[in-house]
Image (cartoon, rainbow, N blue to C red):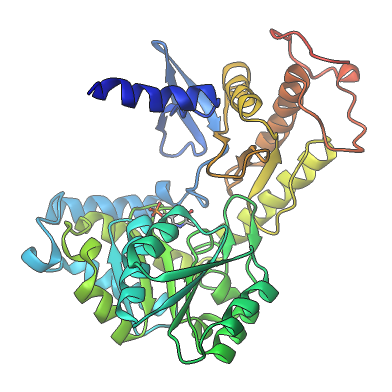
Length: 425
Ligand SMILES: *Cc1c(COP(=O)(O)O)cnc(C)c1O
């Protein structure tokens, strides 16, 4: 058996499909967000990052960093074991209180990542429900899909945000049967939002439980940063709200919140919770500080929305193919994996701007894109620089501008010296 060639073939396959992943070597710089040092081929230089999920820059917030340092100095680096073996470190207890309060729920449970929280919670909840039928949105995140698979339950996939299809599936199921609807609030690749209230209405009508992933909304939406359910006053309509501490809160870890009983059951039955070392106290303390800050402060949220709108407007005016998005996420359509990668490479090499290419299987084939995530720290000048860089790249690589746009690259004096011949007219 030639084991090695099997793995080589698997990787070669990705190269052939032009979707082999390359990670940029970046070093973030506290105080200079969104700037970072990029290292490549022995050289190092500063670049602007436009695709971070540290949406509000909280990972570099001074009070968050000092909470992390204080806790590390007092309590050390690691948690020392699973919570079962080593007990729960006190900052983790505080963090779970903070999270339950954030979503107005009785209890919360923290996991080592958002991925694990979805995988462990969905699988455990569905496994505990006898003969459970899971109804899952077709665009759900990989971590939710893994949870659905691991549960061993029967599943039905409903078309993305399609209430009629969801109702059709609910209606077809035995009224007595246990049902779990799993979906997200903000879908992070398109930036659209689920019809949460209508889904909760359907859940009531057909007696289903509801599980929502608010990973791309917590910290950023709602008067206290509790996500879209907070913004729309719907938290009490959803049974389990899941979130991450790693994106807008700028730390690490994932969690679920819900009734004391459900949380206790997941705590007691989920292997992905029980058999792994707890989050370090310093990370828990940093997360708690970040959540507390964002419960009070509106500044980050309003500036975030402002800069996201300004980015969309500027890119649209520049003729870029901005995909429709209701949120802070700004996807730019490319539609080809190789061009997408080339556009990303050229942005970095020529313009010192980092935006990771998003290809299949993260998004459907033919919808490859650059996914831009403006933060409160991407000021108007950076937006202007981004626009000019993107226009140059689109022109240089012959990527189509938005249909009907009047963009005339030849007439623009902002195009930098081309190193790649222009394709087409
Ligand atoms: C990133 C992400 C997760 C996983 O969260 P991590 O804390 O990064 O593991 C879960 N759900 C969605 C929708 C995500 O985008």
